[in-house]
Amino acid sequence: MEWVDERLPVTELLKSQATEYPTPKNLNYWWNFGSLALLVLIIMIATGLFLAMHYKADANQSFDVVEHIMRDVNFGWLLRYAHANGASFFFMVVYIHILRGMYYGSYRKPREILWWFGIIIFFMMMGTAFMGYVLPWGQMSYWGAAVITNLMSAIPFIGEDLVVWIWGGFAVGDPTLNRFFALHFLLPLVIFGVVIVHLWALHAVHSNNPVGIDLHDEKDTLPFHPYYTIKDLYGYGIFMIIFCAFVFYAPNFFLEPDNYIPANPMQTPAHIVPEWYFLPFYAILRSIDFLGSFSKLAGVLAMVGSIMILFILPFLDRSPVRSFRYRPLSRQLFWIFFVDCLILGWVGYNPADAAIFDGALPLIIVGRTCTAIYFGYFFLLWAITAFDIEKHQPVPKSI
Image (cartoon, one colour):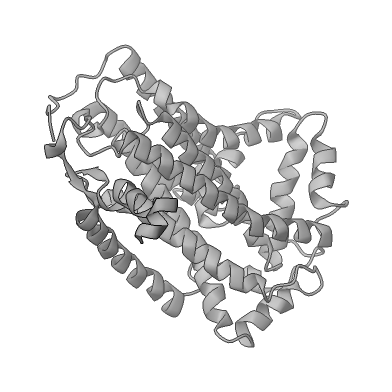
């Protein structure tokens, strides 16, 4: 090892960035979800690699190839179910990771670039998940691809040509499937590279903590190993129990039944819905209903803007206190925002023409109200901090 260290300082790197890396001593289990996201990414890349060895991107064969993987390939059912359910668990873990960062102010100075890389990873995750959803080439895969790619036609001047370019023709078909397969295989590797930069940015500015204050001296920190390696391993154990319970006992819980029907361009499903992790953004898209030809464009801009607004969150929050633990008004707004996202997901799952309260309240009204609350949260957060409306509680000087 000394011979290796003289030429490549592996031991020094491990000590400085892993085993002896100074970590705030008060991190709770909400900080486990960053390492859990890395674990799920590794599971997704490993299972995807083995699935790609048997998959064939062909509009006439892809559905049968997936069935072949499930029935004939040794443990192919395990690979496919782990990969399909892994996507849902990946988003679940990342959503909790993002919400934790929002609650404890992990996007605040000096962690803005760290936060931006996290949102870039989230964007690439969404693209990768969408293209992976198309690959089984079932009914929901085909029509989901047709609906989502058609949104590009809302872009002025180039929209129609852009859709044809994405499709590789004049309809969703074999060229579309080949392109999506190539990108679905490539993007996780790009995500892995950005994750490394994300970790680099994290280690440059060090972790935030529940109190939201800067570390003052060594008494505020602990070495990452063994204190947080054992904590992460405990989290891995709990996660794998839950994950395996779904893979082995409820593998189709997150999957759409219509996707077990071969793609049929001549028969539209009764209700086209995206995967659950896209539902809040889908609800925002449907809720924007301006008159005239700008309706679709406004919906697309609102959907994209609902994620892009996270990039400017570090500049909207101007409070001198990072953590919502000491900011009662911001804390209340955060929980309203959280419930609002859940309601948006429920709205996105139901048909656009549905109604609640015995038909007295159209669902589209609920969707529009929740969309207004979603964007209003960021405006209110800026307003109460910019005009010093919120009176924060005393913050400790040290962990």
